[in-house]
Amino acid sequence: MSIANTLSVNIQKKIGRQRLRKFFLGSIPFLILITVWHLNEVFNWLAPVFIPKVSEVWEAFFILQEDCEGFSAAIVLDQSCMMSTHILSSVGRVLLASLIGLPAGIALGIFAGMSRPISKVLEPIGIFANSISGIAWIPLAIVWFGVGWMTTLFIMLNTIFWLMFFNAMLGVRSIAKVYEQSVLTMGGSRWDVITNVYLPGAMPSIISGMRMSMGFGWRALIAAEMIGGDSGLGFMIFSSASEFKIEEVFLGVIIISIIFLATDRYCLIPLEKWTIHRWGLVWKPH
Image (cartoon, rainbow, N blue to C red; front, side):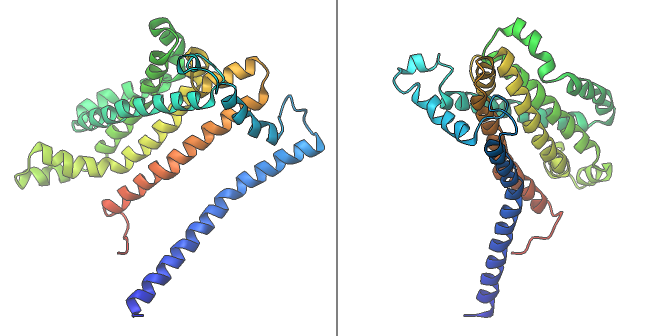
């Protein structure tokens, strides 16, 4: 085996050990939490009405699915018991709001940040909109759109768009004007400035805004589904709480956490790392 192949194998083994170590360290808080949860069941520190048994939460998922297996598709959509329906409903709203809000926020934020006077005028508006975006709009959204998809989508878009817009605008404003002037001096167009200066220069701020938008967007979605939704995980949690089904409430909270954790770890964090390597902020071995 050549020296190059030996080094490659050693590097791969080292990376594998690092990933395993990172996974183990990240799992420790959750293992401790589950252990304490199980000890509460053994020693009965808090009654099941406050904290249900681990087994009851685990069984609740299958019970919710089995309760709707015999219904037709039309009836299932009207049932509050089907777990997969609520999961798909919430995830669908997040995807739809992200597909609309993220590109719109990035594009308008970049164009607003390209002009210093305009960005200074719009910055207070972004701060004002971010302070009230999300669940503060729920009562008005219910009056305007009623209970259902439009209300939850409106709340999500308010949260995602304004956070994305504000971060993109600040990212562009942080770029020195000399880079723009250099591209224009060398004969570049405004589009060249956008694609080669503003977009890559603002990308770290854009990615940070994207992670914030998704986090706050999930919170706003769950609150909107609780109050103004007719399906989704938030609606399921609210319905279960009104019927004192604490195990289903815990199940809903856990599923929300797992979905966002997976989204952040397997979509947003890799995108952030790619951005850092792509624009030369760190050295990446080949």
